[in-house]
Length: 102
Image (cartoon, rainbow, N blue to C red):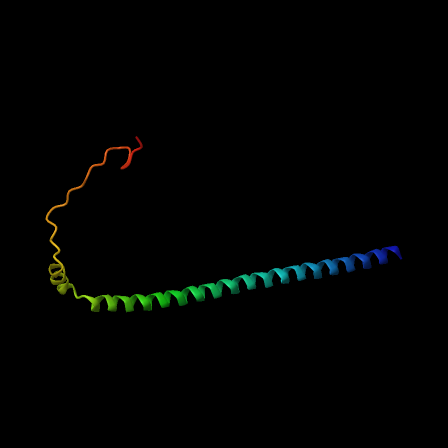
């Protein structure tokens, strides 16, 4: 009788542990699917932002091209008394920085 009882007891433990392990795996699966869903929504939001930025970029490019045409830029500079740069001279600053404490 004790042999049958212990065999039945082992079978019940086996099934209970099997069901618990299966439940654990299902829980992990649900957590992973949830994490993947969150990532998909983030990717979709980022793609939407990229599309909005591309649209805004093309609109700004068109607006910049219409604002001041490049050939009119020289006339605009002359009307504001700008002068062409003939040469560039760089300053050498001694080591120690620009301002010193005395």
